[in-house]
Length: 237
Ligand code: UDP
Image (cartoon, rainbow, N blue to C red; front, side, top):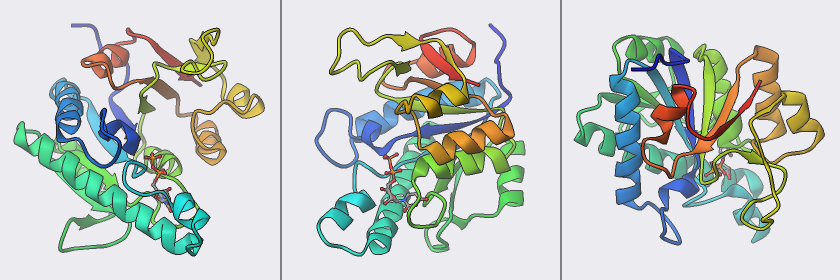
């Protein structure tokens, strides 16, 4: 087997990916499919942190646009990420992958609170750690949460699984002439305002020298391929 490029990664999956082809919420077949890909790399010995968004259920900005207090709406968004984390935990444990969910908003009846040293121990024991509730703070996104956890857990890379197979000059779904980049610098992404992740997430990865790998998580088996340096993807470093 081709060697893995990274020993420990953080995989960020947006909530929208979990909708599959449904218009809202959690499509359990899609969650199971993503879990299958995660199992493949966990079994290959990669230490894995997971962050899942909440956009398939609730986004703070959407609530604020309808007149809600922004912070309250953001807390609802963070709670949505906990639901997604529990769905992913369930799917992973169904196929024999040991997991722990840690929430940045403590809810001990449901999952562990965020404790970095405990998360470290879980990873050493081969468990997949799912970090829920983003950063725990309103006015942030799960992209920033993913970057923060990638840095504090000393991950070798941040993998961003999306419905597109990399970073393009324009939205490839709208512009057929859009071209995919193989490699970009953090500076390119910020200067060209490419829609990859929030600027705060990109800056944190730049400061800590953690590469970002953007790839399509919709294609089964792609996560493993990209980890081996194959498959279609964009690296930002
Ligand atoms: N959120 C937040 N702070 C965080 C992470 C998330 O307030 O640290 C809220 C925010 O309202 C956001 C929602 O949770 O809209 C869902 O997260 P996100 O939009 O990042 O999910 P994704 O787009 O990845 O599905």
